[in-house]
Length: 273
Image (cartoon, rainbow, N blue to C red; front, side):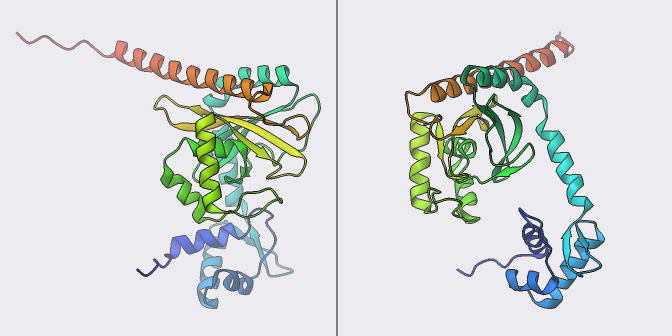
């Protein structure tokens, strides 16, 4: 069966993704070469994106970088990540940070990856991969793996279609090994990132479920590998799972309360005579 050829929208999105994560300037010829596009096609796409503000040309180098429209979308994403769910979770995240003395991160799933929605810095600051609003690699981030393990298998396949790039020597890049890792995570209820994004940094995560039982976020503790070991009996694992469970329960109770209010506000149905 012949593979489906990308349409114009998909080609335009592929062009934009070339600028992730560093936003290095690229010329039209380089964009065409990287994506296997005809020069005229690459030029047409780039100029259309520039006309809409998604790309911007450096008048000195004649090359392009991401434009203000992308920034507007990023701000919209950032605001959406600071939603009610984050506000509900924050007291529990602070409590976890204080209990463990480590940095706590709240990851939210969107599309085919997680984004950092909130960070509670521990007393001993550590370098974690990114800041609020940043996308994390779904095959390496503990929170993303915790969510994927409890999600529809089709989502995992979509993630793997985008590739499993090696970030450090311990990053899992083999699809079969990645599937086995997710099966283990689902059985034990938590995920571990053992220096898979940053050398020297480990993370432990547990999924948060919404009222439909869908994994939508994750509570993550990150710290130096010598302290955050991720072993089954460590306090990090126990408390991360407990915290994720508390937030899950709160989200479900909140939803039930909202449904109760809606039911109470409905006018009574007229009785038939």
